[in-house]
Amino acid sequence: MKVSEGQYAALEVLFNKYYDPLCRFGLSYDQDIAIVEEKISDVFILLWNKRKELKKIKKPKSYIYVIAKNSLKKQIKIHRLNHGFDEDNSKYAPFSPSKEEEMIDQEQKEITTQLIQSILKSIPPKSRRIFELSRIDGLKYKEISEIVELSPRTIENHIALAMKYIHKGLNELNQQEKNTSTKTKNHT
Image 1 (cartoon, rainbow, N blue to C red):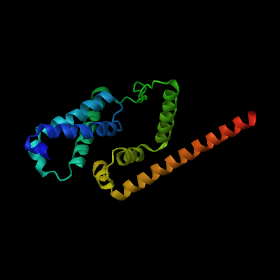
Image 2 (cartoon, rainbow, N blue to C red; image 1 turned 180 degrees about the vertical axis):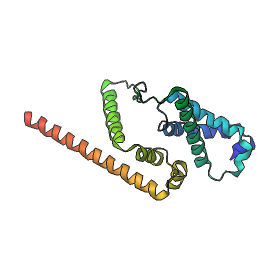
Image 3 (cartoon, helix red, strand yellow; image 1 turned 60 degrees about the horizontal axis):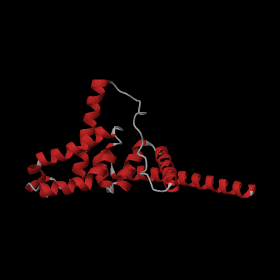
Image 4 (spheres, rainbow, N blue to C red; image 1 turned 120 degrees about the horizontal axis):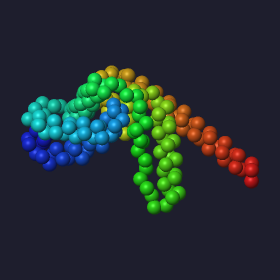
């Protein structure tokens, strides 16, 4: 890593490449986006502060994710100790799609987002997190196994399970659309 040589521009490149995926990853640990963003920013500060030790790191991507995971786990532990465990996630709003110029496009985006979130929410949390690391963040099974501390075979099983839920959700959605289309044709 060029960061280990003190090249600040290299840290910027890392930040730009990993910040958003790490924030998505962090949301699986804490739903408060402000806390997640702060902790992920801290990851890059830590990388810079320990830049001389980075020469020893063989898998920087996994290393960064592990630092993020540990930082977020530590934050959760501190939060639970200081404030007690709070199950109320109602204050955390899901991401809403950006506003489009045309109302129809915006509505379609919202519907699509809701359907995707609905399907993803049906996946068991651990399988969902592993699926997102694989399909959204582009990590390899071995990298994911190091992050979540499970065997690569178990990672494969979680991905397969997530895919079954997605397939089932899409089939149900297609069936609903066919039923709606049939009802509309019968009424005209």
